Length: 161
Ligand SMILES: CC(C)(COP(=O)(O)OP(=O)(O)OC[C@H]1O[C@@H](n2cnc3c(N)ncnc32)[C@H](O)[C@@H]1OP(=O)(O)O)[C@@H](O)C(=O)NCCC(=O)NCCS
Image (tube, rainbow, N blue to C red; front, side, top):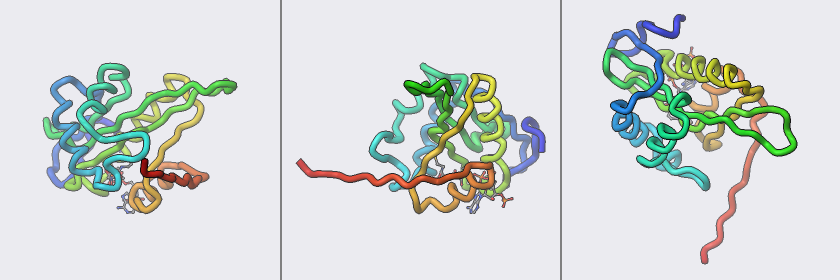
């Protein structure tokens, strides 16, 4: 499967994986609203909102990529690199990955992830991290298929003040 010009998806166009441009931002935001369901929409440390898109675009636009189907946004990936204290390794975090349901299971997520992985390698990243809700089976299956291992459970606690 080639990364550019691949025929996938129900719309049958040619998918191009490329860096996001300013004109993509509204479509990315709205696709995120569609695919990040109420559970996915926010967690303790991230909320899907317009600032999430514009901040990544301003700060790390090279790590914001889109799947463009002849002008239609089929999906996007947003990530970042992280340096950890006392670690010589550089880490990559795939923060958001969203594919339009019309393109589900047609390889768009894989094309985006493969490009993201390549970008991270170029930036010296040695280990990639992803996280999602424990009941997001499609995403967990997807990440396993792409080679992620060692799922570790986190417990979040809250206290009303
Ligand atoms: C998870 C997601 C990105 C997958 O995108 P996609 O384009 O459908 O994935 P692909 O077509 O590349 O699938 C690759 C493999 O992942 C696995 N997979 C993907 N979707 C799956 C599903 N719904 N159920 C089970 N396995 C799934 C399969 O092994 C699939 O290979 P196969 O179709 O040959 O069996 C997409 O479903 C999505 O946007 N979900 C909502 C947002 C989300 O949860 N994002 C991740 C956390 S930020």
